[in-house]
Image 1 (tube, rainbow, N blue to C red):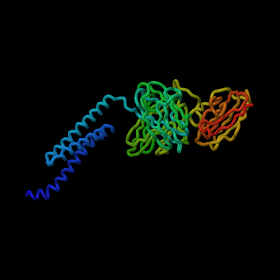
Image 2: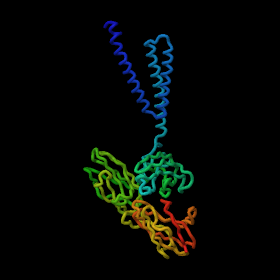
Image 3: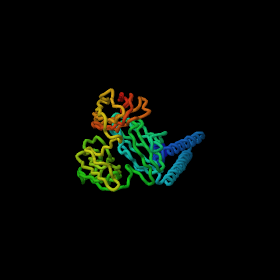
Image 4: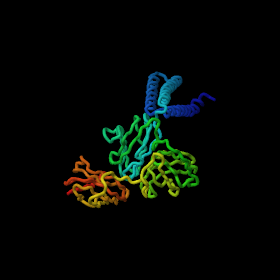
Length: 424
């Protein structure tokens, strides 16, 4: 090949293409290093390499003549810096991984917020390890979060406060490690939404892990059983085997077939695959389970009392009702109802010095209300605190004897629902 032909035609084409190929190969290799290390390490490595390119290019550009050997030296110098920086970053990453083995986040724990209540209200986590909580807010247009307190009571400064999320939506919280103990949590917007975290040695996962384990499979858009039997008041594990290739299934447990109250909602899994669901402790009773993608896949969850178990007889809708403790019914009986986020009366009249009964009817479907009586609107001293009831529903409150006077009653979930109590 003639020199003129090479210099005028071949090199102007081959040289840029070759340089582009080399640059592409270097960028690809360097990107693998950056993707393999942490965000901060990748940023530092990239800045160091960029600085090396600027410095070496400035040195070469300051020369009178730029030879091919100078360009080759520049490439070598930059590559050397990249290799050293990337190697140091990778070595630190490996060291960190070995040193932190067994101390990374454990399996995410799922907590559902629905009808202004958490499900489950008790979760178990491994002590001494960071963990994740997935908060599934199913209350449309309502904000919830989870904040964790340093002890068993909702007092003091929270050790963790998650971001608020407006439902329906999910958020994942990265919670720092907790020492062995019991911790209270609630929602900052709705303080009556409360729960407990048990940090235990070697524990973790959902409702506490451990307990019995049973197998459930899904194949041809059907469960292999229509009855799941669980022990009462004991965390259990369901090993779910989705055999429908390319199809999503899950297992969700509800209080009944109205799907109004979620007791457990398993993550969706695409077949063919398996997953372990950690089911929180449930009171004795019969519940409803289904696949949320294919509601025709459903059945009954039978929770029976075993050794150490207990609880009353199940109500028609699931868990046994646990009314407030107090004096036996007596004195007057007053009817109060709530509808449209408002009480139907502006005043309660109770007899002085006598226990009385308030028959409370909540007609707001899917909304929680209660009646709480305090000395005045400052709410400093509570005289009676009624149990929350989700509408439509009703409950009898047994109010202890009160001295003659004028008091204040309200709903703790909706403080704007408030009126006067007259005792005479």
